Image (cartoon, rainbow, N blue to C red; front, side, top):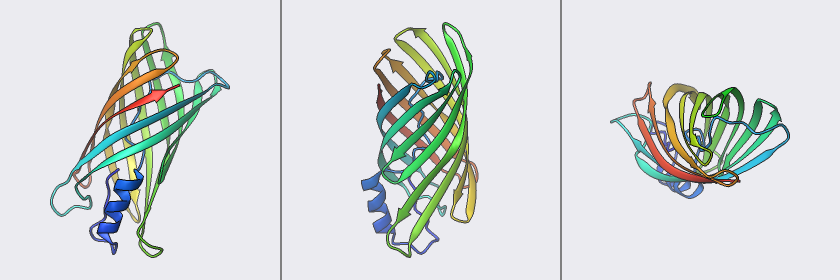
Length: 206
C-alpha cells in the first residue's frame, strides 16, 4: 500500500523513504488459487509486487511506486479450511479461507481476515492502518499444471481515526503442481477518497 497522509503532522520525505525501503501492506495481492491446504499441511509462498497509486488532487494518498515483498504461510486446519499469515517488513495479515466447492476443473472459496500496517518517522509521528478484507476465489484449472484465478475483494480500511472502503480484485495464473509459480495483476479503487491502485507481481509457492 502506498500511503502518506497529507493533513497529518508527519515528515513526508521520511515516510516516503520508509515506504520505499520497507515494503507495505499485503492486503491487495492474492497469489493463490481457490484450493485450501489439507488438514495439518503447510505451504510457504514468497512474492514481490510493484504497486502504483493514481491519486486525485487534494486527497490523502501521495503518488509513488512501491516494491512490496511478502512471505505467506498457509496451514490447513480441517478438510475445507485453512489459516494464513501474510507478512511484509511493516505489515501483517491474518486470514481464514473456506473451500466452497471443488471439482475437476472449477474451485471456489471464501476468505476474510484482518490486516495491520505500521509507519513511523519518529516516536511522535506514527500512522496505523487496519484493513478488514472479504474476498471470493474463483479458479478454473485448464489442466493439472495450469490454471487461472479471479479474486474479487472488498476491504474496509481504517487510517487512524478515518475510514474508507476499497474494492477491486486480482487475476493470476498458476503454473506447476508441487512447486507453483504465480504471475498476478491487481486493480483496486478507493470508493471514498477516489484513488486507483494497480500492481503487478509474481510468487513462488512450495
